[in-house]
Length: 471
Image (cartoon, rainbow, N blue to C red; front, side, top):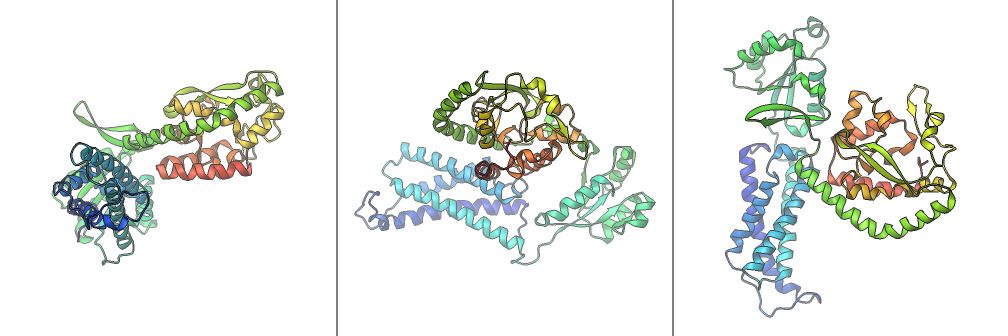
């Protein structure tokens, strides 16, 4: 059977996609006459259309080429359905534009409706077979697939974390057999510890192991060299989890640096493709939003000047992506020089955690309270988004003095662009203290997708209308 991550499956997917592109084109040509009764489509008199045979070659090549560029055939990059279908959607858009350009310079007489219908049909075909495959894979509808059997060397924190990842992702096709660890205590107490590292060869043979994962601490560097040298003649793949991963802000990756592979401890959380899609999303929706928001911005500015003395806008230093400082713009909702009274209103909860926003803050003006309740004070940040300092969706930009108090794990929230709204805003907003904000933000960093951004924006509208947690 073709495994999802194998080269055979990738080649099969490639040829299946190409065939479906040609099939969609053929079906569209045969059905074109049936759409004559639609008022917005140009009528034709012939019973069918014969497209140039060259298009049945060019279109599949363009589609497959675009999907290759977007790594759609790399199963390990598309573990989640949202990633695979997202890449496929972008591929559909780029392929359609490219094929339209080809038709413009070659076969201009091809029906535009036929062309667009074939593109949509192709997209649905490619989505359908991938969806069906995922269902059959998930529910073993085509028979039990042979999982890769894994043993982990080291039953410490890193090894146990990997165990949880394997258990939480059964679709990866990994079967964790157990651990090997030199600790006598772990061997005696933990039933899944099969023995010491000296028994690795015996365990590989008796348990039919396919993959050995080394999850040893830095202090066991000499032991690591010994174990790896013992496995050089064994028919297994050996993986190493460097203990340096505890120092990463989000994730690490192997990159070529001056011709030498190195471990990048500060690898970006977003791939280049994700970053391009996110930035395009921000620019399109932000530009559209400003068209409707400009009149509102003008009215709010006038009311602020009439309500209290001071500037219309409030600019404050905030910490952005990768710790870069920038000036975030908001409508002023407090009295002038409110920053000097910050320590007066700061409170701590029962566990000693800092809460810098309170319900009855005396510094807030009358109109400012309305702006905060409706979140209209955030509208000027659309200009921050246009300048690339922020994103529409992401962790909330934090004030520098609060970031100085962050633990190392909390700083991982800065691995992505900071946003106007985010995961914690739709799950509590100001009702939660700072450290719980961070946990929500890390969930967003680890599960980012453009579809999650859309979900957050839609939920933000509902949360703002309710006015819960805003003050």
